[in-house]
Length: 219
Ligand code: 5RP
Image 1 (tube, rainbow, N blue to C red):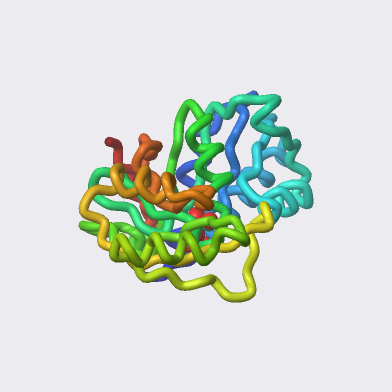
Image 2 (cartoon, rainbow, N blue to C red):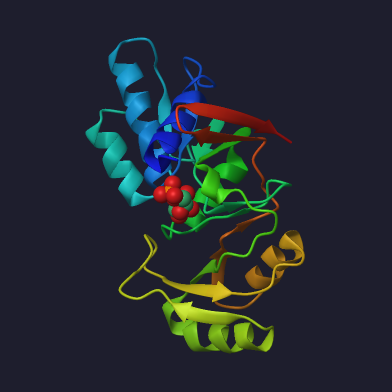
């Protein structure tokens, strides 16, 4: 299956949920980028006026370059957030943060009235088992690594990478028997800013691209 086409199809389907005048959370990553490009095309055609809330510096630059009006969470509440994911389980728990933007992505998703995830079929799994990206204050790295080892995690520093907030990412292999519990547990470690498990804020809809087609899944 053509994965890029699947991502594009999911992005195009998500555009059907966008209404004139909406405030939109704009996700980060290759699938979200397709959505932002299609959104910009529709705005240019003159059929749509929206305000975007970007979830990363990369997304902000892309959206500004495409002429999309932007704002912040302090000024606007998003009606809808559209973002990608690294893994999605049957209950719509997610792992995000492959692009290291999960802290802001979670803030925007949590503030949004509705949250749609767009993805290709490789992202759908029975059980979450991807490494969990954990954003960590640079001076807390060693203490957090120690704590993660104590709870059975295998943290690996993401090399040559700092987040938009100037922090580090520890990509951590760890068993996820209960996504909601682990999301809270990881965030209770001093020095952790946020982790890539989205169990408290799950999407209402997942749009899975399948080649030229899509499958819309609702919780
Ligand atoms: C970035 C993310 C992305 O949504 C996730 O990595 C999916 O990316 P892609 O659409 O490129 O597969 O969480 O922090």
